[in-house]
Length: 315
Image 1 (cartoon, helix red, strand yellow):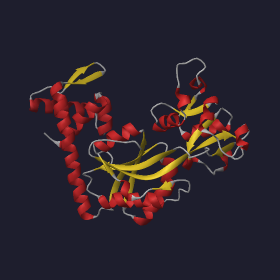
Image 2 (image 1 turned 135 degrees about the horizontal axis):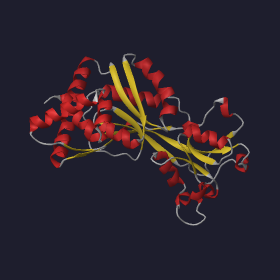
Image 3 (image 1 turned 120 degrees about the vertical axis):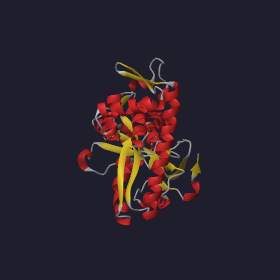
Image 4 (image 1 turned 180 degrees about the vertical axis):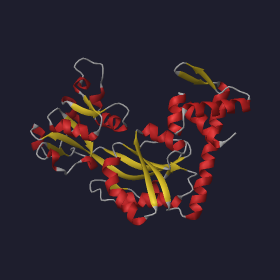
């Protein structure tokens, strides 16, 4: 039994497909299949039921794969401990960021980190919160930047900043001459949202509960359009397709939409999201985590409210 064979069975369990698992492990499918069969023969049990275009895990396979995942995480911890013993701020640091944070934080964050820790190499992955949570849990990522609420066993979260929401309008919209917009006014407009699966979409629905009543006749949700990214939605707004809610860091000063887009604050206390850093409790490079946290705190994000260290929460 080898760590490589354990990686293979964990990949098959995750992908539910031998071909995709082989691609994820950067080996040929025959190589992976032979290794999995060899491990099954060694253990004397069947881990996977193989059917055409479908793979399922046997009950004993579920238990073995769960243990294999733990073994791989412990093996990675050994590697990280060794790396930390050399220099915690040297080598790769695998950072995950959700789609609605990465484009607006990373251009500020990366130069700061390069200046403060030139031997630290960020390996960045952008994805949905659910995907980042799983990658963090199984050790494929070292730390992630997400929006709260976020909970996972064995994970520590450190809130970084509160980010107010703003309203983006076509420049010819009547509200462009208004200083601030009330949240309840959104229900009567064509609201542009990110597609399902994005946590920012859910947060916008929480901001405007009246916009979430799907199913009723003449429901506002029937006037909702979707986009694949915030930048796509900004362009849809500029073209006159509707209005949208943005995190304040997504306000763009670029000239590609100059004169076509107007941004307005919300009246009263602005709705906001809390952005946080999350990492495994056992992660052995605390200096790298602190460096990252401090660098985010020092980024020039003028519209956010920075939070201090005492908000740390462990799950």
